Amino acid sequence: MKLFVGAATLPKKGNSAEENEDAYAPPVVQGLKSVPFHCAVADGATETSYSALWAKLLVDCFCSIEEPSLFDDQLPSLRESWKTATSSKPLPWYAEQKLEKGAFATLLGVRITEGEFPYLRWQAIAVGDSVLFHVRACEIVATFPTLASEDFKSRPMLLATNILETDAERKELYRRAEGVLEAGDRLYLATDKIAEWIVRSLENDTKPFVQLDQVVRTEGSFAALVEHLTQHNELRNDDYTLLWVEAHNEEI
Image (cartoon, rainbow, N blue to C red; front, side):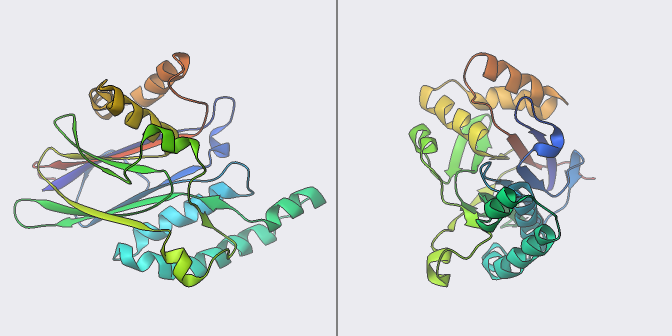
């Protein structure tokens, strides 16, 4: 099997694309990809400095490692990379104080490999409230992490550029899951506000994946969906990111 992959991201209303604090990897040109395949999304915390850079470092790192279990070993070098990149920037004193507090971000990373024929296998790690949805024929198969819509009102666990925990405590931040993909199955990776809308829609049985099916099939329709949902007060203003992967029988 191959993987049909696509992604879409939008900044907060009124912000430029450069101000988008979400990140995803790899850079997606919609089309078929081979396995093994890594993908990730991250959501930088708005109230912290250079959180977009931190989110980008996290997703790029996840996509460069061989196994999800190896990600935590890379965190010290990622922290150093962030500090090196930000320390060279001249800032006013109040921005310097904010910078000292560091940056924070969620992370959701997925690795897809060959499984027992004819299936594929996915493995995922997550910190925070970016969510993976495993979908078959527009119906939910699995959600990871398992969250209720009310859970999105609480501050999520986050990965920080500053060392705020012991090694043991940091490793407790990660949640892990795995599953099996059949031909036609999709994985959606969503940052918090899109994930919250999906979870609430599932709770209300309003078929969110029927709408997202159109996003996958129609280029540019993600922006139209977000606009519709915000106009109807179903989405709060935020950065929005959705990455999708479909197990596909067609050869390249």
